Length: 87
Image (cartoon, rainbow, N blue to C red; front, side, top):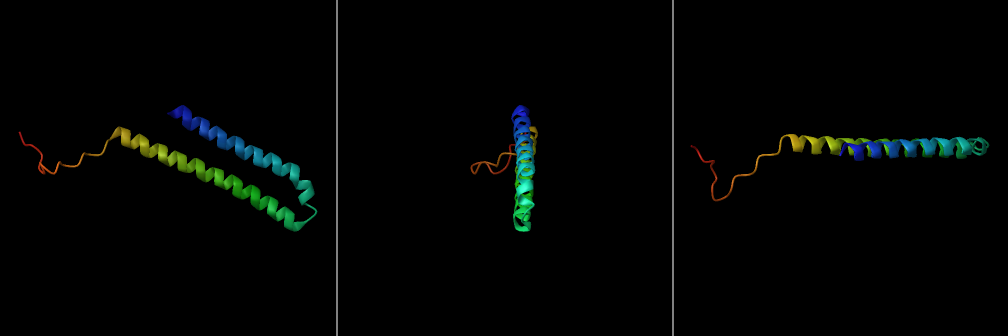
């Protein structure tokens, strides 16, 4: 399970790096127009922020699954036996 989490993290990191590299390449053309530059920077920022949110969401889900494995929730009482047996 940890391997999947590491791979997802590396995938998000790779995507972030590609956004930055593509932004650097586009920067020279976007510098000619303030609107294009603003759109480029805003697009890069929101893309990286979105990947960070997805990664954080994945980590939270993983922590919840780990907690459930460590201490499973108590099973609800059976309707036929509402009270636990006392020995």
